[in-house]
Image (cartoon, rainbow over all chains, first blue to last red):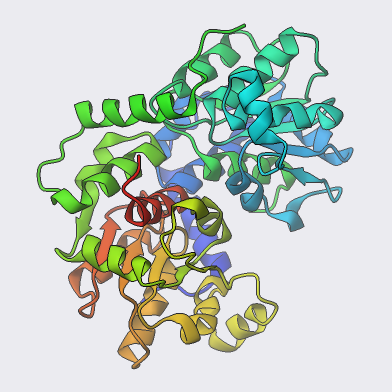
Length: 208
Length: 208
């Protein structure tokens, strides 16, 4: 037998203790502290906390939306898979429309990516939703456009697109003018579905 | 309309060009170059390439296994979701056993995590499989134990557990003695389901 910790809760506890011992959590509001720690946990990097930006009301807006049963709209199935259903306070629906058969044609018609086109199918659920981007910059850009065009507004935008083209820019656009919508982003190229799901999981329950 | 690139293939092309212009790819064998680039793409960090370690035969072993129809065994559903089915060369099965109803009791009986216990259900598919760890150090440790106990051997181990407790150690244990099995790991705390899926997607098809 190899020598390693086999107790899941002990692994969580020790992980979060290591993060808190190493991380610079100054500048993180008390009600976002667990979100920041969980995002660091998801990627194995405590310095990602320095790249977080947020509106002051983000944690309360997200928590309250989930408590009143808001759906969670995800740009990628990996984000949806990362949401721990047992943490959700109101059996909230977790929705990813990217796999809908209509999306490929929608994307062609719109001249945009499938990730962006999939947001057309969010419209019936968008008002008051918790929206999580863990993959596609084009999807986050498209949401901002939809809101500028007059769509319903979500309760919270979690902006964690990742990568080298558009990710940094889409998150900067959101943070610069969130259209009055509470938000959390990680600036820069880093991001991803694990961080986005971690942010949702942190808002869904206080449990660590 | 906001100003951003809306063409998916153009985004990929530009992303990979940026990575190749910034990354230090010395030390990466030619047949692992696309895997290294795709792993960097998945996390938004070119320097992760410096933390890759691998056996010399890893790319050929993984590619050949996939061509002959090997199943892909994943420690987490997020990894399974990240595998692009249309890239797979032989309609390969993508298997994650973590959600099986028997796993919770198995974990209790074994005194290990559910992620580790789920590997008991891999046994019928383990011989010659491509195995991908994108989450749980305990699962990678457990695979090494199973092999030491005489289980069938996979064709390739992709070791990308992430986090603060056991991740670094599990990947070091694999790289130090892979039991003769070809492998790729990213050393350190970094890793995750997106990198693991990216590694599979790179081996599955040459297309970028």
